[in-house]
Length: 123
Image (cartoon, rainbow, N blue to C red; front, side):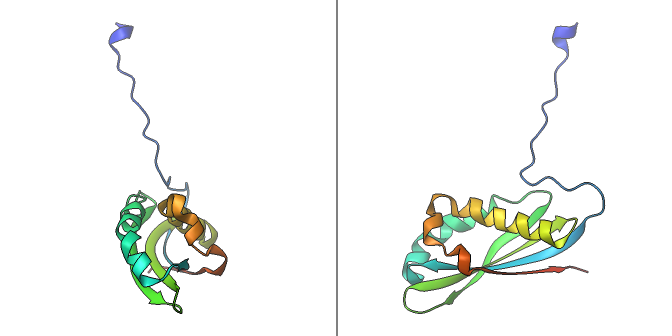
């Protein structure tokens, strides 16, 4: 009879919801990318798909909100998402990790040291 008992597999969440009180935050990232608008246009579809794949219980609606040209060879990609977290630091970390995973092997084209972030609680 013990052989017939099926074991339930635990599903690993991409972004586990923190225990205790959580707040819904909006996370806005502006991350510069080298190569200009034409190069960005060629890879933006794959990046947006990879970013959307990061969605989970604690990370909702990650998407590219827009682009902003920064000179001839740079473009700032504007990313927006909703994050459920215990505090602002956790929300920012979850948003940044989603970006890094979406950037994947192409991380060298991004200028993370010049990135800016805004995090605020949603009502």
